[in-house]
Image (cartoon, helix red, strand yellow):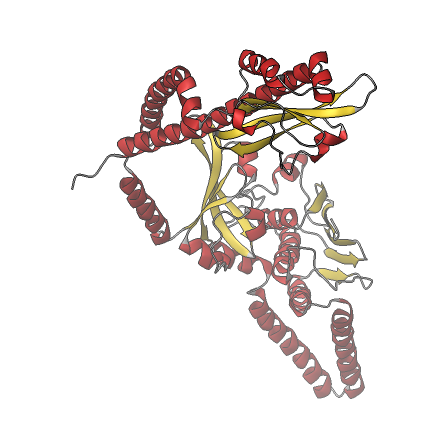
Length: 524
């Protein structure tokens, strides 16, 4: 069987809708016509009844001599085109009627009671000839006493009569509607087919399936949103990386990934390539590009991958691996202390050896207890201990403010982020002495936290920086040291601070030193 084209199907469907709409419109028009006819017949019936009821000879004949009333009423009925005009006295006796056989008989209509109580009204009733519009008007004499009732009836036209009376209008409107409806259906179907690149529905369905499977087969994560920030693409790799098990198509991107940076592309309206981001505690390398149709931005797409190598480098810079090197430093340090103790014992200075042991043990215990009490995260405490040992090996005095407090992290951040921040700032301070000679090398660290603010201060008296260097210090790849794998640590720090809605300030002066102050507002 030959498959009908989409254009043919759509033309037929739209044409059917036009015909169906025309049918409904015809019903409404006919109904309005019938209703208008009813209102017109009600008015005519009232006029006819009042005309007869107000005739003096009718009133006199009802009271004195009821003969020949029909001869007066019938010409009026014919002139007014009424189906019937009936005059009744107060005994419900018919005094006039189009059928002679009905004159003199008692009317037993259930809806006549109000008319005999001086009420004027209309109603609709079913008669032998069809539906009849009736009007009831009381007859009142000169003494304002009711002496009878006049009932006029008009037949409602039947449905076939209504259709025949409107046949010219119906044929004209139907012809115009079908012509323009058919032409419009064909034109609209052609336009839709053109906008769909002349593709048939089964071809579009195949392309959709192929597109979905292509995205799912990609090694990179792919997420796309429309201009309303609703997710339109979320491939399998992105679900694995972002730990999103359920279907999210159609949901708001912020409801699925709160810390995403994809909606900002809709505002920037320009691509951002090879940008490292922190999303759900993942280091990713992202390319974010606006989706444009006919030069109008209709959405944005992000293609990203897990930056494992960058993460390893960050760990190298910030102290995740320095925990291992700290063991080496501590081993050297304790070996030196053991050699000192052994030498004092060999020289016979047992008291000095014991005093030295107590002094070293007391210093280490004091620092350990302080960190345990005031720094509530073991990763941060371990990082600071390793950096203190490392500073001693480098001949640097690393002082931690004993009023420091850290007991919780800002929204969207965790201990991994703070290891990167603190570790990078301290390493940056170590590096500030690499090409200069200074007798007193001091690094000062302070962390303050209250109900609404968390601040971190790292200060050194190293080489410092000029204004141009301060402006560029957070740029990826920029470094004041002529070494490989530099210019990444502070760039990561800046990104993490932005993710936590924090602020970072830098004050630096050449040959004087540098101060970093990071502030997080915990309830923003």
